[in-house]
Image 1 (cartoon, rainbow, N blue to C red):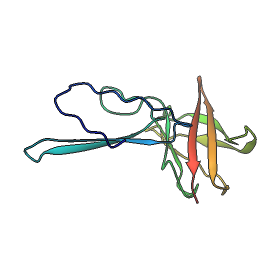
Image 2: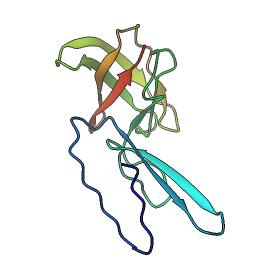
Image 3: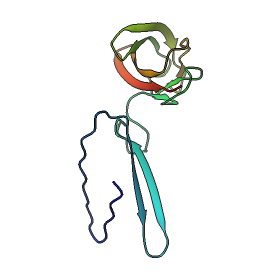
Image 4: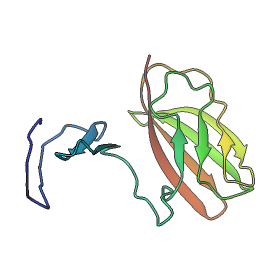
Length: 136
């Protein structure tokens, strides 16, 4: 919103937003010329103590192509069913993948139109749905 403040330890801004696909940026600086900038998406997952996201995630997200879309944070060496659905809940593609020892797996989806998509991953004792955006 472009507002600034001095002296207060905790400043809270509340906004009504139509979706969670926004980035929020905090820019901090002092009179000595030191500063830092942090940006987060509203739909981000939390971080554990080592700074790694909790649960699985997709990258790059957003993406301009499904070429190179990767699942990370999954169970190591797990075979999983992956279902791609569009924003209307229609199944677009279904894959079977196996994650590597680090819990990563390439998702070889065929090209799709720009839009919001959901990827449901069903593995051994684990089931997660992740959101991602394709931009053109």
